[in-house]
Each structure stands twice: as structure tokens, then as C-alpha cells.
Image (tube, rainbow, N blue to C red):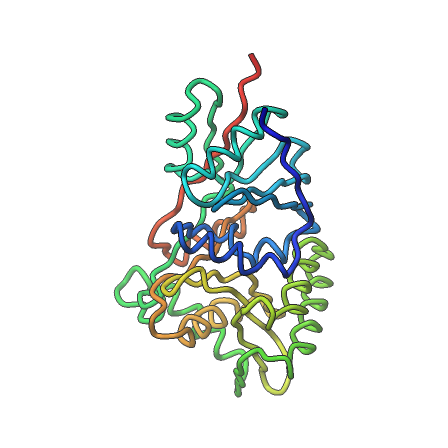
Length: 290
């Protein structure tokens, strides 16, 4: 008889195992990076369970039977799903096309599927976003130049333990300007407070002597960077801040993951206007209760 799975809160001690599994089996969805899981653990009520070379995340904020699709080696993922099916009626979130095919092949007629447009992930070509060549980027070039001109002098420096408190202050001010967006503010605060431990990368922006923005993210692999948080106190500077971040990324980074738009109209317009290279389609798999 399959034993029920035991879940536990996500802790920094899980980081190496999560990242080793994720990278070994080629998972490049930002939601599975340890930095993202750790930053959002309270708001999403995440808990983790390992089995062999795989792990699964319980997402209690979405329901008692809600899980991110398991990440890791094929047979270990199957064992996790078998164990879940023994005791629950799981619904799986953050499915890629390959994950959907996995469930359709291994568990035919056990799940129904729906596309989640609000969770589609925006992927950008870093060099294209820096160079902005051609007429299709004319408006974007204008917005970047307009943002740059909002200050006569910009000072941009790497985020470090010496200036992280300044970023935390920006985060709080951003929250106050955005109707106290508590979930996003709390997740960003958790990431900043554990910035070094999570091996994150970021920049702090000062405009005419005033701290005005920060960006912070994590490296999904040697070529893909996840821009987790971009907090700008002056909205007119948003495009300039992002362009500056892309320009400062390590040379080997070719791709920037800017996550989903959550169905927020303004955010969707913003992300589409920046000309993504592609959208990663995301699905949900609902258990069919016969």
C-alpha cells in the first residue's frame, strides 16, 4: 500500500535539493525556482514533499487538493502522482504542454484540462530588448528615452547587503502607491531579506539623488534570468529601468522570463507592448471525479 505523502513548510535548507532536481531535469518554469517558491511561500501557502529525484508543491491558497505539477525525474514524478491519487483527488497547476501530455499518457481519462491565459509566461530575447532595432520597437525606444529623461542624473548600482535596506524602503513606498498590494510587497520583502542566501541578482536605481527603483531576480539556468520583482516609484521610468536591467545582465544570459500578467489589463498591455519572443502556454489539470 502506498503511504500518504508528508509535506513540510519550505525552508532555506531545501534550496540545494530543489535546485539540483530542477536543473538536472531541465525544468525552466520560473515558478519552480527556489527563489520564487521561498519568496511566495506564505501568500501561496506552499508546502513541499520530496520523493526520489522529484518534488511536489502543495498550494493550499488554491485549495486543499491543489498542487503544482511535480518537478523532476519521470518515474519519481509518477510515484508522487500515484501517492496523491491514493488519498486525494488532486488538481494540478502550472502545467506545460509536456506536463499535460504526461498526464494524458500515464493517466488517461483521469484529468480534464483548461488553458490558463492569465498564467501564460512572457519570454523575451535579451539582446533584442537591448538593441531595439527596427520600426516595431519605435514606441518602446521612445518610452525608454522618456523614462531616462525624467532625471538629469541616474546612479545604478548592484543590489548588495550594504544597500538592501534602501530597496526595502522602495518596496514599502511602492506598496503605498499601489493600494497596499500586500501579497506582492510581502513576497518582495521576503526575497530581499534573504537576497544573498537565495543567490539573487538585482540593481538599485537612484534618480537625482533619490532612490526610485529596484529590480531583483534569479537565474533559472546559465542562459535564462527570471525578473521576479521590478518596483519603480515613478511609472514613467518603468521601461528605462527594465532596459537598464537587461543591459546589465551577464553576457551569457540570452533570455529573460517576465512571468505572467495575472489577467490584469494594464500589466498585459505593458508586457505585450514590449514584444515578447514567445508566450509559454500554461494549463490546469482537474481530477475527474467519476
